[in-house]
Length: 360
Ligand code: GLA
Image 1 (cartoon, rainbow, N blue to C red):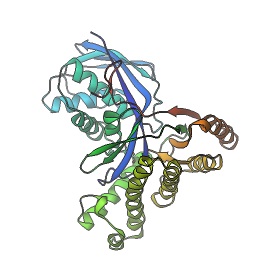
Image 2 (tube, rainbow, N blue to C red):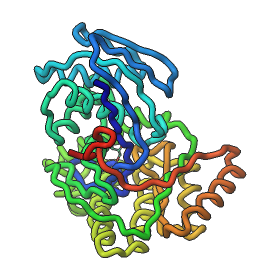
Image 3 (cartoon, rainbow, N blue to C red):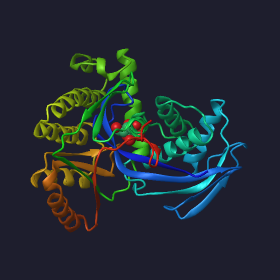
Image 4 (cartoon, rainbow, N blue to C red):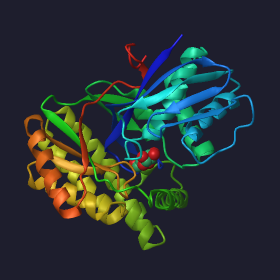
C-alpha cells in the first residue's frame, strides 16, 4: 500500500528566538509542502527530487550521520527506535514545493513527513505532541541542530486559516483566526543562512545563561528590573529583546483577535527592528525588504525564522499583495542584482495523509 504524506513548512508570525527560553510565539503552518510518497519495504530507499539522488540505509543497523539530507530520515528512525517502537523500512520519493534551506523549516517538515509515514504504515500510535517532540529530538540529537520546538510544533498543529499562539514552556496553545482580508507574502532574500548555526548557538547559550543566573525557568517571568541584574551589556541587550518580544506576541495575538490588521502589522515591523538592532540576527537584504515593504503600503513585515538571511514575511491587504510583491521584486533585483523568489501563503493544516483529515 502506498502512502502519500503532505508535511507543510511554517512561518513564524511573531515570537522569534523565544522558544529556547520558554517564551511565547505565534507560528502557522503554510500551504507549501514536503510530499512523501512511500510504501513499506525491508530497508530505507528514498529518492529526493530536490537533490536528484537516491540514498538508502538499513534501519536495523547502527545509524551513522552522513552530513547529507538522509540524516533527517535516519534521525527520525533513531529516535523512534530509542523509544522502543518497531518501525521497518520504506521505499519512495520525496518531492514537494517547499523551498529547501530558505528558513521555512524544510528540515522539520521532512522529519515530520517521515515520522507520519512510520506512524501510519507501522501503526506506532504516536500522538500529536509526541510527534513534535520526537522530530525535535531527531534534529537536536542526531542532526545536531540545537533548535527549539517552534517549527515542529507548527508543522504538527497547523490549522487552516489559523495562527497558533503558543507558550513554548507549557506547550499550551490557542488557535487564532487570521482575518480574511490579510494577505501574506513570503519573500526569500536568496541569502543562504551561513552564519546561522554558530550565531544561533551563541544566542541560545547567552539566553540560557541569563535564565540560570536569574533562577527563572522561562523568559516569561523576567522583567525590566531583572535585566539590570545581568552581568554584561550583551546579556542585557539580548534579554531586553526577549522580554519585549514576549510582550509583543501577546499584543499581536490580541490585535489579530480584534481584527486590527494595522496594529498587527505595526507590531511585526517593530519586532523586526528590535531583532535587527538588539538581537543582531538580520542583514542588509532583509532590512531592505522590510523597509521597502513598508514604503509600498504593507501593514508590516519582518524576518521569519532564525535570521542571518532566509525569508521575510509581509502582511498586507489581500488586494495589494500582487502589486507590492511585483514592485518589491523589481527594487530588490535592481539593488542586489538577484531575482528573489516569493510566494503567497495561507495558514494550512498540519502534517497528514494527502486527502485525509489533515491534522488528525
Ligand atoms: C529556528 C529554530 C526555532 C526557533 C527559530 C527562531 O527556526 O529552529 O526553534 O528558535 O529559529 O525563533
